[in-house]
Length: 287
Image 1 (cartoon, helix red, strand yellow):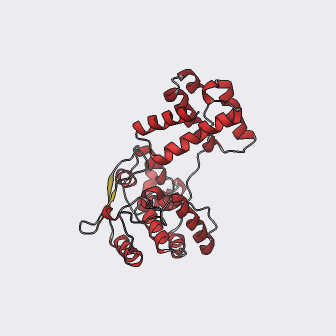
Image 2: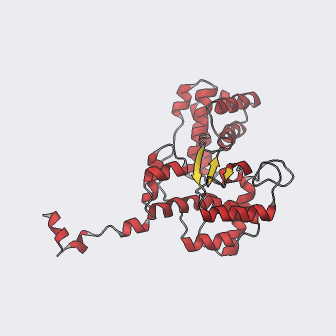
Image 3: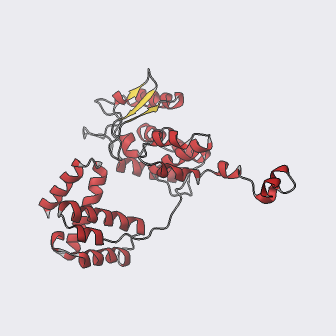
């Protein structure tokens, strides 16, 4: 299996899949082999479906998680093994559509203030202030901050490794300068990990985020992506059009960005009910 997993990883690298995605896709293939006690290459559609049923019944995995496993197994059987018939037979679960959790401005401020470390506070500020993914924020280098041109360069986009430039707003610029003067990070990384020579991991930031949530007494289930969702929703509420938001978030498809329209209470509140229009000139439009 090790040789097959190495080959699969190389194929994902050639296709430009992000490191986190590659790691996520390798895990299900390894788990499939461990469940059956033999190489995944020796399994057919029945073996794969039995494994997915195990994830559902015994492990209690939600449909969205099972679909990540299904996507990884499809890639493995199609690209790595060249068994397209097996790949096409891997079923996806029907996942109910869920709207992302969004914090209010007050909740965001309380959460950011609850961070003890200036490093973790700065990362959280970037996730909300620029809509970054936590992996993108953690991977930033000092050279990516262009104070003169007021630009933030994202060279390590986690979705398809797309580069993009974002505006470095005055408030965000001040927060980053305060962090830099406090920590004085050495080396190229803006947020270096302790003694690793590498950037701070997103797992380490998530642990700090959980502690901050407890300190802020948040009653919502908060992840780093919730800060990004909150940024996008508040941008739409402020009047940002979807195409501009798509570019800021680095989405490949406009449909992905469109979900934030459904999250904007301000936009929804502006749409009157036909009942409220009765007796007005606008009601004449109904005939």
